[in-house]
Image (cartoon, rainbow, N blue to C red):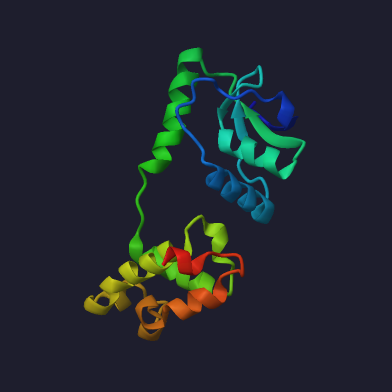
Length: 181
């Protein structure tokens, strides 16, 4: 039978002492805001004794939110050596991914158009603006853009629609937009 997700008390979980990954206070706040907005969507991976294999940041965010329990998944099948390797692997593999800049710009623009609070994305407003401009930069020079994105018209291209004023009006009052630009 596959392992089941189990709610466990946060206090019963033990951080891996040799975890090389570090989480800044800012990142913990971002994870906490994501959990508050979207729910706890990714269980903490643990050993049978409650030792954390992956999810240290999520546990710290749960503590910041005052959550008493978090979803966990026991990885009982891993040897001690595999646990050590997976702690590193889990942290590194996500960093190896890249971005499709055109698609990222399209997704940001769709979020802006739907008036979604972009602060939940983990990107600063300055980064979003930069991605929209760099992702959109290829659209104006690329005659094949419309062929690759048939559901969008040229007028929907982020290059034609993006401006800093849009981001400023979308930003929550607490967002430090000017300081980041």
